[in-house]
Image 1 (cartoon, rainbow, N blue to C red):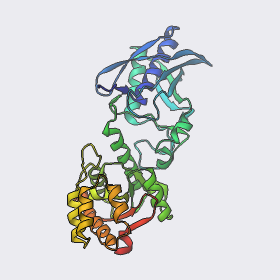
Image 2 (image 1 turned 180 degrees about the vertical axis):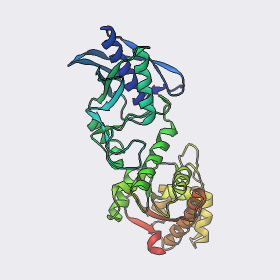
Image 3 (image 1 turned 120 degrees about the vertical axis):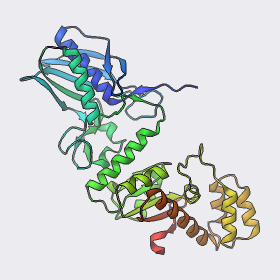
Length: 357
């Protein structure tokens, strides 16, 4: 099955801005507009509506993420375009577009969260509509229910308040693409650097983050980032930013994969090697029958349910975190201190390498 590509919020904003500008200049609305993409390609975008508002035109585009699971899919992105003083385009953010309140992002504090590449894309689209003649315009980008949508993103944690960000480095969205997740990881780490966060806390998802912050209530939400299966990538980016300390909150199955040095831990590309885990169990003093069970188990969860109260379990957890720390530091390329908090599925801490240091 071929997954359908979509387009970014930046492309949606550019299309709305071009549609509103054309309507303002010609007195006629358009049902589609052709917009430039940052890659140099072009895309034809449907226009939801274009109508007069105050002294300008308000046009709207429905953001289409294709088959990508994006919270902004079907969001209504609007551009209100009206005559401005002088020449050139003044670009601002309106209702539903977030405002940056912390350093470390590609947009300065106090400015609307419209990233640099979408800003260029919007200005190019408006310039195409204007043609050769000089004209001053004020372009305001809005997002229906933007503040509500933003609560489902990392924006509150990044210090972007009041709405979503207008994003996109290529203009289109590849379904289930890794680059968008990786960009979020980079952005979160950049904000931590800019705000002098001493120890990033990485988790594989929301539940492991909740358990981590419950176990360590002194950890602020701004110090946490959910990195999913991107073990190598997250450590490499943390190493590039020269963090001296880092902490993982993790479940048993992912810890085993970290210990085995998998760069990307999703089941599609990183099978769980339970035979090797069984050998490690044997080295920790588990009985042969238990080791045989581990080698033949179906899942890591099944293994944990079998061994987690075993007298030798703490030795195995220590071995796994030590091996995981080795790979984490190797991937980071630095001598940073890396610690692990291992949780069972109810949130009980099975191993905290900081306490064992």
